[in-house]
Image 1: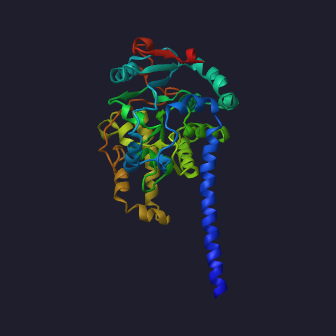
Image 2: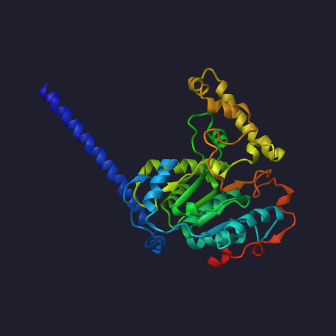
Image 3: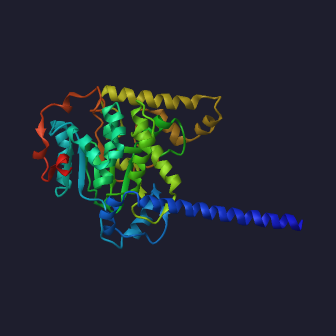
Length: 382
């Protein structure tokens, strides 16, 4: 009995030591990553505090965590995310439809710099700043996949805000510039479409609206994962919402806690950056509406599978069955109270980089330089 007692103590102490070692290894690997991109960090670390006074969740996805971050950062007046919006489009000319969205940004943030990255600027930018990723970039068969990938490079290099061209801004983003990286969420129903029926809702990251300080560790982590990811024609799974969600979850597992400002990521409520107009699909094109209902319908139909024991418990979740009861209603059922900062226009019929478009994407063209005050071509920054 005495021997068994000593053995238990030895095993207990050994487990504690192993856990401690694992924790130290995680933090060591995090700070080791900081030295990988010395040029960028050398340009940015002087602007930011070297460490937070306490360890906080690396991926901050609730309001309690947000308040903790704000409390620890309130001592500084620094807004780490620069006043830059990166825009990706074919050339200098945009339709009146897109111009109306861009004007909403100019009204709210007239002192920001708006940088347009044309198709002709993209490969030279990658070659100059990420030569190790150039072959991967060139190997992507679909243009939208290259567009998805390069937005992470722009934020890592310059920082600022990336938002799809069809985003209307309705409120100042300055309060989010206190964070060092912000990854917005897709609507809750999109998460059901991507990952099937589940509860609680798995936050689906949205690459359509991203914010960052330059040199942020998360976006370097994203690019590292993309460099290893198998290329397929699944747009969503490579660098789109599904791929970004998986990468964010991997990042959280690898670095659960941090006191490094250039490591934390804030994930705001989906309603703040991806509400549907009038909480409905009724205002969108038939093509887009049919696509969304088909995808959500396939996911919700799984709830009726009696042979799957998981579905038995999910059918008892009122919020989940509510999302599936009327598939034209798309707003969050968990929380639609947060203020809305930007609206992703849902009149589109398909990606503007793909095959299907709405005619208004290319009607009544105007030069973007005439819409915003502080305009730059991305090519001038190479």
